[in-house]
Image (cartoon, rainbow over all chains, first blue to last red; front, side, top):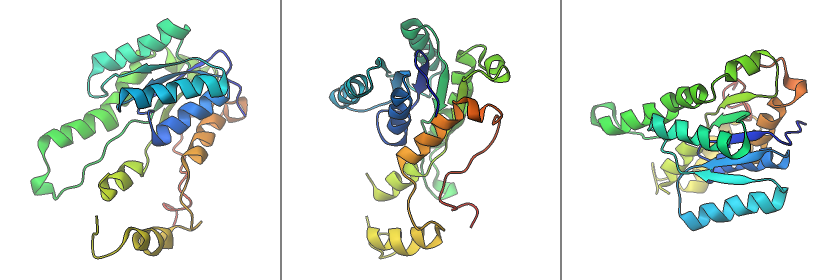
Length: 158
Length: 60
């Protein structure tokens, strides 16, 4: 399994669920972590501190809104400025909304496109030479995740 | 929430897991473990791929 000591992983939507599992797995391999996502500040701080104490790495939280390109760039910059580089980006954040097409709210459509699609490009662009590193077979990775968790949360009405 | 007069447990066992070849849900930790594998030298030649980790859901 990968050893990521000294590397930095940014995981979008990582304050809970699958995103948090990514963050904790990368921390377990030695990477410093940029958490991102929404939630109660106390809950986020609890998870951030747990990552640091459980895995002896550093973790910071970025509240960047994945519908706002400037904030996404700021999230990447936070990782670079805090830890020196961003080596892994997991585009995990996603939302879901289900509705008959004739009733589908335009603002929900825009938010889904912004978070589930456009934010991946913004994050990747923010890491600058990510593609060059991939071609050099460095352990530098851009993961685009899609899951069913958003669906299940929606259906459970949670 | 009760949709189609099914309980949550009925939906899980009779609808979702019925169509799931492994008859189990994928855990967050299992998804994260795949991501970690992709970061290692053993996965150096895996790039630009779509990898499913869904208990066979899409292959069924």
